Image 1: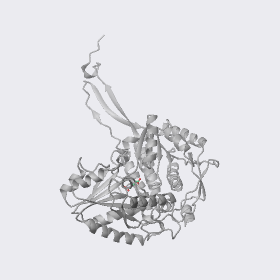
Image 2: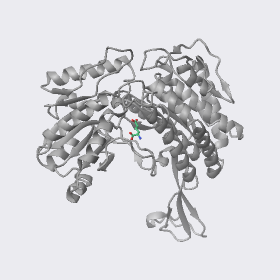
Image 3: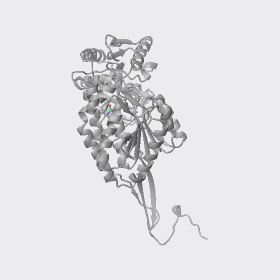
Image 4: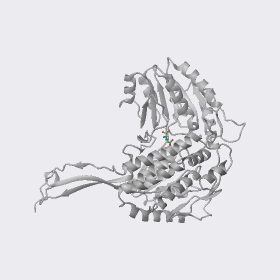
Length: 511
Ligand code: UN1
C-alpha cells in the first residue's frame, strides 16, 4: 500500500529532503536521516536525507537570486505561476491526499480535503494577485499626492507542523508567491514525504512554464539548521505553525533580530450549547470537532460548555455517538474509517498522561480513556471527561488528542467567561437559536478568539477568512481576507507636483 502511494507521486524508498532550486535535489548523504513512520502500523515508510549547512547556504543564495527577478515580475504574472500550481495539485489530489493520510494518519477524505484547501488558496491567491491594493490619501499640502504601495518583503521562511503537512504551507507559500516573495520551507520531521511530493508537483509545473524557483525545501534531522533559519537575518519573515512552547521561542528569536513572525500556535477551543441549541446540528459538529483528525487540529474542540438544563442529555447522546465512532477506528487510508491513529507514540503517551491528570483532578472518564494496545499503531479511544473545573491544569492545557472536557454552565455570561478563561484564543463556537445570545457571543464582550462561529463547530475553517488567534495562539493571521499583507512591506509615498515646498503641520523654515 505505502509503496504504491509513493510510486503514484514518483517517490522512492530513499529521498533527498533538500530542494536546491534549478531542478536539483541535493545529493548530501551525511547530514542525518529522517524516517517518517506510518502511524497506523509503526513501520518506516521511507528514508529522507536531511540538509547540510552547505545546502542551506545554497538555498538561501539561490532564493535571493530568484527574489531579485521575482520582485519586479508583475503581480498578475505571479498569479499565473500559482494558477499552474493549483492546476497541478488538482491532477494529483487523490495521490497527495493518500500520502497525507499515510504519513500523518488523518483519514483519506481529510487528506483529500487538505489538498483541496491548497487548491482553494491557490485560486484565492490568483485573484488576489490583481488586488494588492493600497490606499490613496489626501495630502494636507497643495499640489501633493500621497499613496501607499505594497512591495514584497523578500524571503519567507515557513515552518509547518505535522497535522496539516501541506495545506498550511500552501496558505503561506501561494500568497507569498503572488506578493513577490520566495519561500523556504522546513516541514515537520514527522511528515517530510508529503512536503517532498508537494514540492515535486508544484516545482515541475513552474519549471515547465519557465518560471524561476519560487519554493525551496530543507529538512533538519536535528534542530540546529532550524535555529539557524529562525535567526537568519536574510529571512525577514518566519511563519511558524506549531506548539505554543516552540512558537514562543521562535517569536522571541525573530523579534531579537527585528524580523517579523507569523505565529499559529495552540488552541483550547470550546463549543457553547445554550438551552435552545439545535441538537441535530450540534452533536455532529461536536463529534467532528473533537474526534476528527483524532483531535489533532489546532482548531479541534477540546471543551464543551453545556447549559445545565440539557447537560445530562447531551452527555448521554455524545457517549452513544462516540460508541459509533469507536467501531470505525482503523487504517486511515481505508474508505470506511472515521478515526485514524494519533501521529506518534509520544502523542499516545501525552493522551494517557492527560487522562491520568484528569482523573487525579477529580474527572470522570465517561467513555474512552484508553490506548488500543490490541493492535499496531498509535490508536486511542475517543474520550469524554466530565466533572472537571475549567480552571484545572489539564483543561487549561492543549493536549493534541481526542479528549473532550464537558462542563455545565448556568448563564450565557458564565459560559463566555469560562470559554475565555484559558491562555489560548484560536477558535470558538456557540449553538443557539436565540438571536440575542448569538450576537452577545460575537460582540466585543463575547468570545475573545480569532475565530467565533454560530451553529457550526470550531474546526474546518474555510480558506476565505483570515485564520489565526489571540493570546498564546500567537496573534498571526493566514489564508483569506487581507492576510496577504503580512507577506509585503508597506511604503507610503508623497509626491510634490507643485512649484513650492510647503512643510507638513504648517511649519515655516525660512532661511
Ligand atoms: C491547523 O490545525 O493547524 O480550520 C489548521 C481547520 C483547518 C485548518 C487547521 N482548515 O480546522
